[in-house]
Image (cartoon, rainbow, N blue to C red; front, side, top):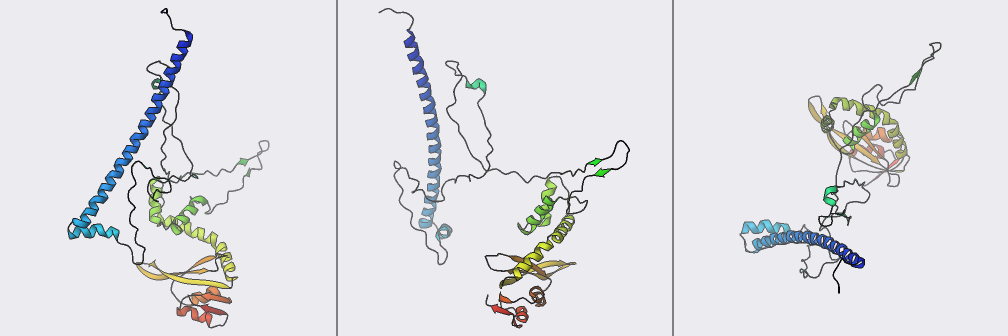
Length: 333
């Protein structure tokens, strides 16, 4: 046997072995990282179980005050089904299947309908060079983490531009583009902002002083009194829709109603007023709200007029007038 340079097939075999070894090292590194994550999770679970065990020991062997505090977490509401006894812990070597995992434990996956914004943290090109063979490394996968994020509502300025044209030859006949429809003529707010204010106040129950602060954080100064004027204008424009809903409601032969007291500001003092809701059957789902400064039955008569049908209400005497006419049948609430 002669000693000399390695044969070409030997070089190919060595390169193949080196590549296989590097892939094995990369795989083992990934498995090691996974084992570390699993160990971290197990340690957290152990600490949780230790806390539960200490609480159980205090409830059994501790002083009376300590037992009261810990046992309160085990009480159930009157009439409620008591919590079943916990099942014995499974052996560590037997991993739990998806069906055995208790509901509510662990982080739930984020909804798939949410838009994903991907932020990539790549390795610097200088660090992607192998320290042994000085060749560029190949990608073997990605580690990812999904976080739930939020961006505040966007406030922007919309410029309404009207083009103007004139005859350059004679200098006469200037024409301008049609004006854009506006909720408030030459007003500051656009229709989207007014819709947001109205929805936030009446659907999301945000007081105007909070909306004032939210706009102020965006560098916009709008007072509550100004927003009151916007809402009043929106109410004027929406009144035909409310009247049409009332017509459709009265076209039904069955109406439910009830009123709720509210406190309203009257000069320097507050007084009690009422908001009454009128609703028909679930198939039509019309709901009309009516404000009344008092609980007089005249508001009921004015709303119903000569309506005929079945009225479901409580025993308040304000409904007796319309029911005594014979056109309305009063149903128990």
